[in-house]
Amino acid sequence: MISRLVLLRHGRTGLSGRYVGSTDVPLSEEGRAQMVMLRPTLAAMGIDTLMTSPLRRCTESLGLLELGLPVWLEPDLREIDFGRWEGKTFAEIEARDLGLVQGWAQGGRDFCFPEGESVAGFAARIEAIKTRLVALEDQTVLLVTHGGVIRSLICSLLGLSLDNYLLFQVAKGQYSTIDLHSGGGVLTGMNLGAVAE
Image 1 (cartoon, rainbow, N blue to C red):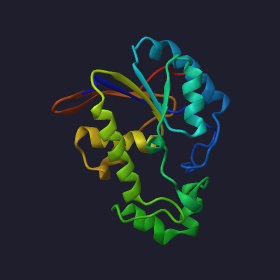
Image 2 (cartoon, rainbow, N blue to C red):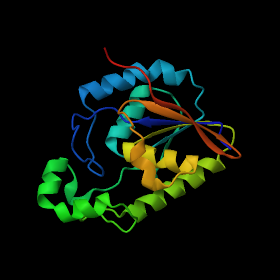
Image 3 (cartoon, rainbow, N blue to C red):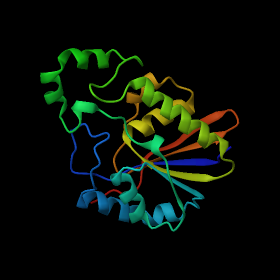
Image 4 (cartoon, rainbow, N blue to C red):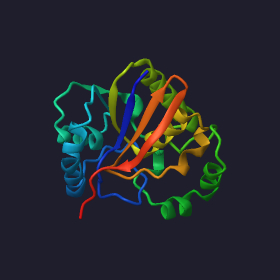
């Protein structure tokens, strides 16, 4: 199995407080600076494999790290599609779709974001990427992806229900680490990396 997974959330986009899933937005200046500050730390980790979401905020983040390795673009690492909630604040969503928000809050895989992706479909993508990851052996793998994907992968790799994904706060421009053993995963670090002064 993999010796270590490094789960890096893309840098900041300047859209904090808004639901941004499938919308393809670039990094902000602050987000670019976050990635540059992470270069020495990630370069020293001995990364063997690079995987990234195809969305621009992730590919741009990875490019700024300048790790000099081939990149595996992985569509299953993209964030969930919030449909018509894309780009909106929670208050805007609640004002328009209170009933749907309440349905989402109840959890369950049968929920589908209006005009977007179903929770069941997203969960299936997470399980598919997990299967591919655990098939790689004795490698340090860097995944550059999104908050929802990282939270869900942490749950899946630790043997927790995906219903627990909101228990993990995943900061933009920070990384978490999971060591994988034959018996499962161990969360060894959370929200690590350089912090801007």
